[in-house]
Length: 156
Image (tube, rainbow, N blue to C red; front, side, top):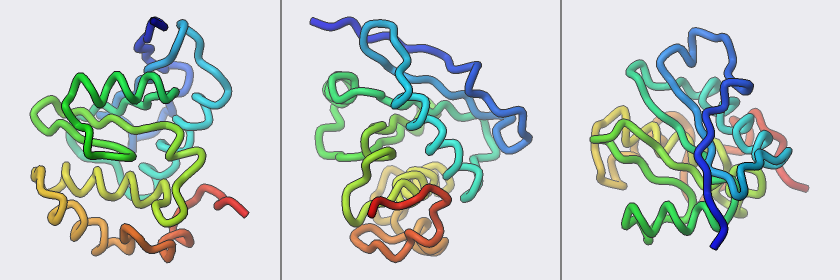
């Protein structure tokens, strides 16, 4: 079995008040941070900057491979999610990196981040609450109409 490693990405940290209380990590295979992993983290940070990071300390973890995502989902018991999940009691959000860099047709990186921010802002595990928070900011699941809000180029 491939060894998964959690790395704190200090090199990717942006000296910005937006991220003052945020920490960013990745889970990678074989102790190797790839260009793809760096891209995934950059997309996450870009979306957080556009939407607004939480005002409280929060940890963001990107699973940079499908193996890492499968392992995280299994350990957390979050099998019913395709893109991300938030553990409110741990102040931590896990994001499936491939869904940032290669999003599903109607689920943009902006929606993924806005939805998870909805859980954080409402302090709720209910999908309805997170969806309503994201929708109030112009992001809706199942609709590509928030693509204009994303600062990340969409796929052709």
